[in-house]
Length: 447
Ligand code: ADP
Image (cartoon, rainbow, N blue to C red; front, top):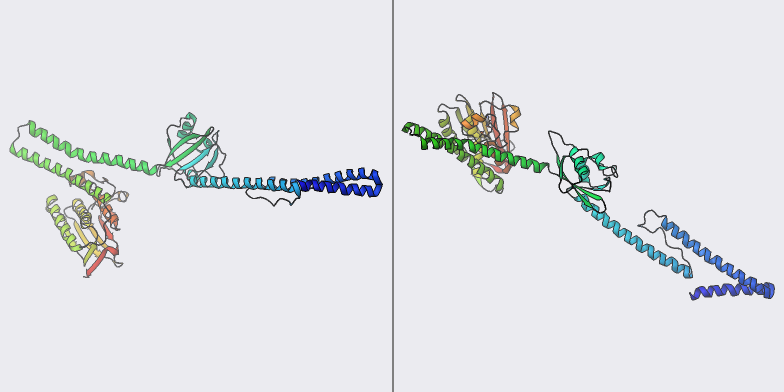
């Protein structure tokens, strides 16, 4: 401040003295007037420089950066410039901080596995993440400020938005949903702020499929158990109410035993499946002789064949080279036995069943069960390993099938890193193979 007054004083004195020297006493007044004008001019010059700099700051479109240093001005103008610079710097810092926070917030919403759409007061899209864009087929940039009702035209969604009752979600078909590959979205709107809405979308296709599978599974199990149970309870009632001859009693008891055996087999298969799903994967440290597995399966197959049809199909077992296989003995035995018993059950009396163990050139090991049975039409092949899927229900039941055999085989194969291959032609027989990876096979003595 002192410097400013000093400058003003110097300006006045110099101009006054100059006026004195030029025009004497009268000149002093003119000199003072000139000094005041000069002082004013210098002030205006500094003010303009400051103003120019402020204008350039104001026109800067990205206030994250300061466009330039303030002009170097003397005295009070310098102080004003400095204070303004500091104020601007603080403002820029605050802007940068809030921008960084917004970016982080949006990145978090972007990373959300759910779709997120922010809607303004009239339902226009203000922002949406990539997941929402995929769910609804939006373009995250192009569709900004578009009305959501114009982009999502599902009637269920339109009704939901029109009713404005957002206490629950609505399920609609997602983008690219087709009848063959349905995509289900759960959409839930939440209000926030002043009339704004947060729309969350979640892909529930897998959930719905799992729920449908669970329902089907329970219905199938109930159905499978109800049939033999009805038969057994009917016979019990007959035995309780009617005076029967011994021969009839024995016949009924034999039929009851058969039905209870069916229920037992079903429960065992269900337990096997649940064990396969719930237990840890079999390691590769336990090795088992393939010939032992073979001998056990052969015994089972021959026993079943003699029960089903004494003059049953011819059975040929080729145990191949002396080998060992790594994994769970019980699981592999159960898988192999399912394939062999299926062949016995579905092949007619004059047919041929050959079971073999082959070590392939690349070291893989193949259990192959080939039969000359009825064969399987191509449309069934992909679904055979589904639980309770049967081509001929009555034939399956007649021969004691549960519809779970191939599902068990597939599980066992997957758990051992093996592959279940099914080749078949209608009327030409079938060939079921489990191909084990080379790492689980070791040849002890080639043939
Ligand atoms: P199931 O207990 O009914 O035999 P599986 O899961 O073992 O159940 O087999 C599923 C279906 O695959 C069977 O119902 C049968 O229709 C068909 N199938 C399985 N093995 C053979 C085979 N060797 N020849 C013909 N059809 C077969």
